[in-house]
Length: 572
Image (cartoon, rainbow, N blue to C red):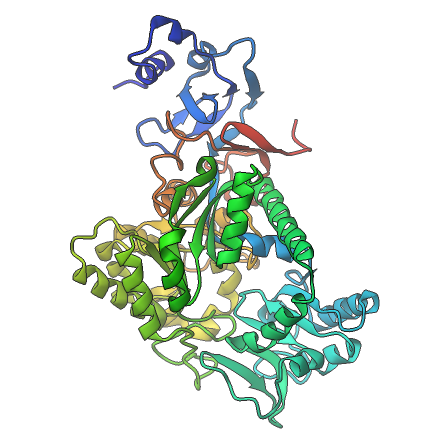
């Protein structure tokens, strides 16, 4: 069948209506470019028409011209590429806003640079005020700090420049933190403090804590931070939360993202999102994973479920749990020891009994379950639980349970994703960020067989979703897309190229696959008539330009529900 013309599309939309309804005109038209629809029935077009918040028609420039009226707003694409709005498949929305309000350590090249940044902040801070930062990664520094323990610094130089202020510096992965002496004092950490379950306090050769806290050990200091926040008034706390949400929305929209899978928030944040949606102050569509302990979740689960709330801006139908840590901080739970730390197989951060309890609660209440697992042991344990739950509930279908990250897999477990219908919610940019130290951590055999095996998973029939895990990485779909199709490192080498996705696959992983992973493929993820008019316009055609040119692509427009919510000030 030839491409459906606009006239036929309108007839389909308005079937049963009077002839006068055929005079309908679009509110917004994008024309004169390339429309990559991610719809196999009509993969490409020249123009698109929007009525209210919905796609009215997709077709040629001539066909869409019939829908242009005197009040129709027109965006001339001038040959640029329009795609379905990017859907961030795994990120931390409020974390993005919070990161904007603290020291940004993502680009630092040395421990000394961090100490200097904290020293400057301490000069401006009031005594006792917390100094916070986020994004450091010891593997990205140009040299190992003097006196390092397991490649990580010790707190003395940091403590010297901040004697009167507690300092908390989050690792890029979110699975470790570095703190100074004052923060350890407030957290009750000394040489005698035992490691908590699922965590580790790193010690030097004398047995003194270095300031490095892995996984659940971070909570020892986090409690002290929380106590300090209790001194803030309710008004101050609410203003801070709303500021974080606004900063996050601005950042997300400027990166071409129209929907965002928020990978784990508490009930207070869910209540805030609902308030923002009620007030029309939630410009990005959120798919939220509720995250709390099993007992608390059980008390609230019946009240949590909501789909398409606030004009399709807020959905809560999934639960998030975390089973292990990150590879960079030696927290990923492995089947065999780390190559560079033979004494460790990583950390199991959540008892398996709790995992099984939450899984039973999720399936009984119709919730999707999304579990963080990075190491091959962590992924196997999750797959085992999922398989057991599915087998015990044969009447429950189309579950779409997910493993968040799915980064390092044993070859025997790769086919199980497709067999079980488990979604691999991965992040392309993590591959090229982690690649310089993956072989050091895992050795070449494990790295080749199971590290970021996107193509192998795709071939099993599994749905591969994409994202950035922001603020662990910059919330840039362009950067993650480039990593997904190139797997190219800064030095020009390519990390196991056989696992690259094609450009079309990568675009699908960032649009339609993420919509499917949220049960939303009927309303978003492709530029199809009747779906929500969520569109991103790019300065370059990422499907055809030279590969190394992809990172230079800019977001020109971000359109949510037919409204332009971001326009690049440098576009013309």
